[in-house]
Image (cartoon, rainbow, N blue to C red; front, side):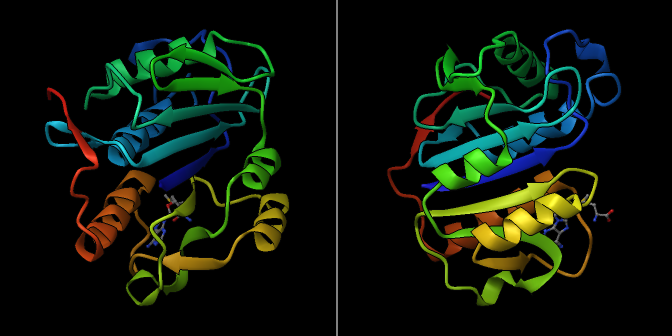
Length: 203
Ligand SMILES: C[S@@+](CC[C@H](N)C(=O)[O-])C[C@H]1O[C@@H](n2cnc3c(N)ncnc32)[C@H](O)[C@@H]1O
């Protein structure tokens, strides 16, 4: 299983946002949508061996965890707007315990520390100044943690330092998180083609 965990500092933690304002009032929900798509979709297919998680930390009731499973997901399309609608549907669930809100989409009140503790190692942090991803020995079961448009907060840095294996870079340029996800997939796809781990879908 490949996992991508995105920490989204400003993302709204309720469903009261407009699909016309994903990048503004929704607190960069556009980025969450793009990362979900980059993590789970290929052209005309879904990566069934990938999980995408987003820890949302914006108002009004942080934290919220959204978890999207490639093996189960239905109705995920490449466009930001319909993915934003799926995320908004998930945020309508306000409980702390995890609930299945749509096929392959789960929502809960878990925060970063809880999420990291539940993920089997190795967990790697993706950052511009890390060691070169191309030189890293990577397992088939692996998790990558990314931040949004902001750097990790000091307390997040401290937590990640105790719970992660390596800090890895995909190259010298600071990229958008969804671009980094695509590059990581590409690197791993080249090492171990995903025969049998794609499900066809439209779009
Ligand atoms: C837009 S960047 C974060 C902001 C960035 N520090 C800046 O202000 O220039 C989003 C996230 O993508 C990941 N990232 C960006 N560039 C990267 C790179 N070259 N290698 C690995 N990860 C990268 C990191 O997790 C980063 O927190």
